[in-house]
Image 1 (cartoon, rainbow, N blue to C red):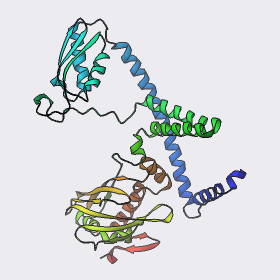
Image 2 (image 1 turned 30 degrees about the horizontal axis):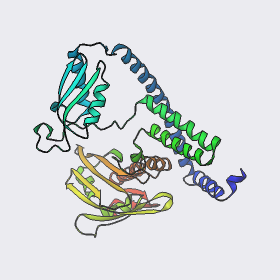
Image 3 (image 1 turned 90 degrees about the horizontal axis):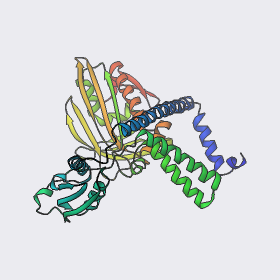
Image 4 (image 1 turned 90 degrees about the vertical axis):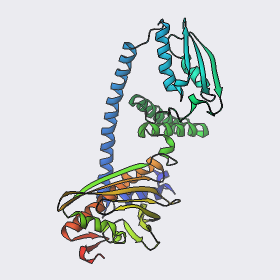
Amino acid sequence: MAKLMNFPGGILLGAGLMYLFDPVRGRRRRARINEAVLRAERAERELLAKAARDVRHRLHGLAAHRPAPDASDDVIEQRVRACLGRAVSHPGALDVVVRTGRVTLLGPVLAAEAPLVVKHVRGVSGVRGVVDRMDKHATAGTIPALQGEGRKHARPRAWSPTLQIAATGAGTVMFLYGWLVRGGVEGKLLGTAGAVLALRGSFNRPMPELLGRRGAGVRVQKTIVVDRPIREVFELWSRLDNFPQFMEHVRDVDVELGGTKSRWTVDGPAGTKVEFEAETIACEPERLIAWRTLPGQPIDHEGRVRFEEVQPDETRVHVDMMYRPPGGVIGHAIAHLLGWDPKTRMGEDLVRMKVLLEEGRTRAHKQHIELADLH
């Protein structure tokens, strides 16, 4: 306890207590953390159930569909051709000849793929040997059979439930042993590797994507129905400079950059602000508004808002946004827990938009906003 109260432990402890027991927002923050814990428990139970089913199915599959090693040459040839479809970009370019279990590979192939082809074929059940007579080429060149992109065999991004459980468990054990038991440089390295493995298993996403270096990013979708004509709803959304007045987390929108570009200032973590520039890339009256950030912005994101007339005086608004947060998926998870992520804020601002259009007034920035006062 004494160590916690020393610098910087005391500062971190004090900041955490202030965050959780803030007289205005502390109750809501504690409720959000409690909700996240309950959601994590449900997700863990579901993952364990999926892993158990996955193990049963795999064992059943191995028992029921184990290939016979003493198959005929025709059967082995079919197995090899099926294997080539997963191992090479242009499987149709290769010829396969099987005699007494020995496989001869003929035809053109990219040189970079040739070793992988031989490795996969050797692993086919019933194959007793592989004779490599493939015509290897550094590039496709003018070889007709190698033209085109061919098949892409990207490694699966998602792990099976069984592998998730194994990775998360093993990573957690490595982390605890390395940091709490072994110690030293080697222990910290082992613990860090375990933490990385546990995160990979828990989130089931590639590490570069988890850390925000690359990947598809985080997708956010929200839909709300407003009891107003589609013309009025679209008109409010098309005037970006009005957003700071009724959207709690938007501080300023400068539309004087020229053309379809604008500069935004929004709330960031812990009372900070984030500035970025964006451009409107599509605007179809009463149907669609789409945008994306310009290159080099602090947060890279893009999205679109679709408007659909449900009834003459009822409009459905659907927001679909993709963004790459600092810290990747992990950063998004932390931001969601603390209420700073775009999905949480978008939901709050959509409700304010609905109230503003339906009742003619709402509350934002600790003051009342009248629809009639917007320009």
